[in-house]
Image 1 (cartoon, helix red, strand yellow):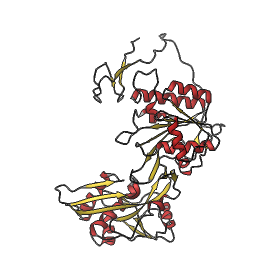
Image 2 (cartoon, helix red, strand yellow; image 1 turned 90 degrees about the vertical axis):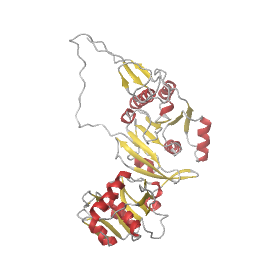
Image 3 (spheres, rainbow, N blue to C red; image 1 turned 60 degrees about the vertical axis):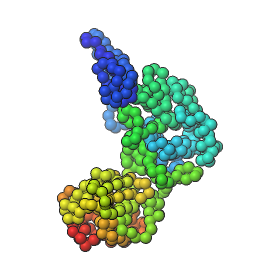
Image 4 (cartoon, one colour; image 1 turned 180 degrees about the vertical axis):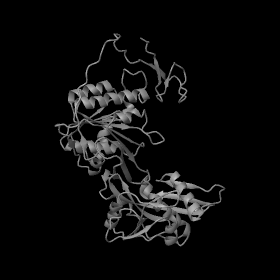
Length: 452
């Protein structure tokens, strides 16, 4: 039987090498490569067999896993309807965005609802956590605290206490003595996450892990951690805005891409029951370049304002500045407007922004972006009681989008009386909304702006 070959792994980036070297060829880190013990070899006897695995069918009499509600409706919504027993949740976000504040409020709410909750911090002392709790008005919540980074001691404590929920803040500070690398390295994060997730499944304890993010916005450490856990949440927001978005990018117990909206206040995070009204609350009188987009975030319709500014440029390469939208999508829409509608943006600076710090990713925003750009370029304001949505193809045709009826219902609820959308979709015949449907972008430009 062939001898197992040793494996060498970089503790900084996780790259595997066939031999030891002083410098990792993948990330350039020095003295970061360690030898990992190979998997134990199986029985040497050629006739040895493994055990037979017990199989079952899809039909079962088992009860579905129980969910616990925190009472914070936006947080429970993102989890898919509450906290599932024995689940592992990973929460990431930029430094200072409010991750610890959110989780301290959530764990206090679960504790007040009757759950046995622990909060273990590897970044702050217990006195600092108590200080934040008093500032948030949570000083009387029955949450037990600890400041510890040794994972072996943490697991021993959890096995003795058997809590219902434990928050680990953060996974990058955990240290497992059986792994020969510094806390925060790829090997430590991977091993620590594996131990905590395995403990959650075996003991029926729900575990929430806080994760740092890189400058690209991804959770730091190996991507295998995101595969281990049941739910991955990102806490997003702009420092200059009070709005915060909790977004689910993976959820085994509920819909992905669901969002919860919070507002940062002096007393902590306050949930926003009607995000559309909040995002549009500061919208002033009609102005060129301002268009209301009726979008869908997860399962909820949401109205946001898309703002555009087009100005003559003195640069050889005009600027294209985008906040809250994909810059590649903006380039595509500008190209379609020039190629299909003969409306050039050469020599013009283009600035595009989603008001309130919201991020829009769905293609249904194409028509609203085009309307905002044309409104700013032609200095023509769109009627303030109008919402716009639709996808633009490279041929200039307008494609219908999903859940048009829900978008229109949300618009009607907020007092909008008309909508511009692609023809041919399931518009639902919403009464009280004047529908203006268009087959292609040329017809839209000609009717709305008298150009093209």
